[in-house]
Image 1 (cartoon, rainbow, N blue to C red):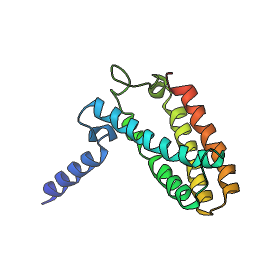
Image 2: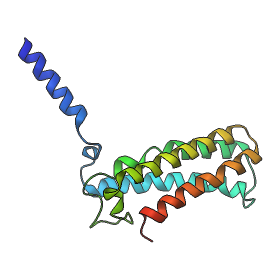
Image 3: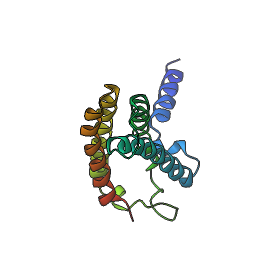
Image 4: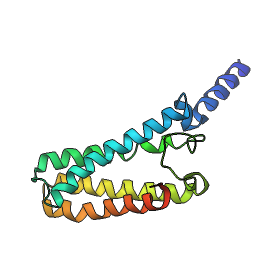
Length: 151
């Protein structure tokens, strides 16, 4: 009985410890996943940013909904940056993502934090609050792109 319990515990631990990239059948799947998540985030953020810049009519509900989707999407792409997804595929990711993972993760965390602030600002329905939160989100995206994205 003790051996069976130990075996079950070991199998459970091994399953939980599998790397995040194991959820993808091929590196191309991980790349497509992260690119799709980043696209959805960018599209929703851009909708809010256009309102903040006066390039689109302000609609408080659309802004709040779009900011909420962008916030949710900001948490998704990082699992798609696993081993083997750095080269030989349709990606603009620089090798530094994998060689300076701590810096990359720090930028990702910063962007997610700023995106959460934008979502909270959008929930207030105040265009002024949204305007104040859009800049830091855009800045956090640009900082990461400058360091980790090929143009």
